[in-house]
Image 1 (cartoon, one colour):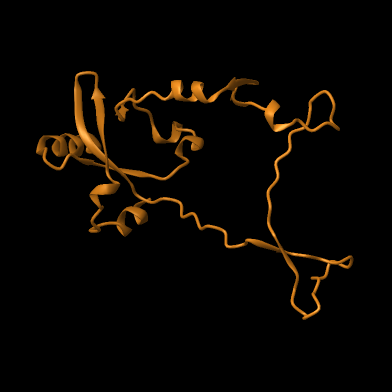
Image 2 (cartoon, rainbow, N blue to C red; image 1 turned 135 degrees about the vertical axis):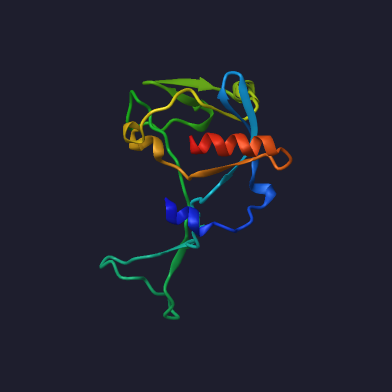
Length: 165
C-alpha cells in the first residue's frame, strides 16, 4: 500500500476527479472533504469483432482467394420456460426484476424511476476496530484518498488530526 501512495506523491489530482462529501467523525462533528480514487481498474475494450470459421478438422476455413473466412460476432439471449425446458419465452412475456434474497421481485420502468433517491454523499464513522479483525472481503475495490476542502484550513487540520489518531 505504501508503494501505491509513494507512486502518487507530488502528482496533482485534477479537481474534476475529486468528489465533495461530508465526513461524520462523531454525531456532533462533521467536516467537508474531497474524495478521489487513488488507483482504478483499467478497462480495455475488446477489439474482436469477428470470429474465424472452422471446418470439420477445426482448421480455419479459406475462401476461393485463400483468405481466412470470418463472420460477425452476434449475441443472442434466450430465456427458457421453467415448466417446459423445450419452450422459449417470447420477449413480450419477459419482465425485469431484482434479486432480493432467494426471490426475484418484478420491476417496471416506473418502479426504477421511483427507486432513485438522491442523498448527499457522506462517510459516517460508526466505530473503530483492529485492522486484523476486518474481513478481507471488505477491502475489495479501488482505494480512495480523502483530502480537506480546498478553502477550509480547519477541515484539513481536523482530517490530519483524525488520520494520525
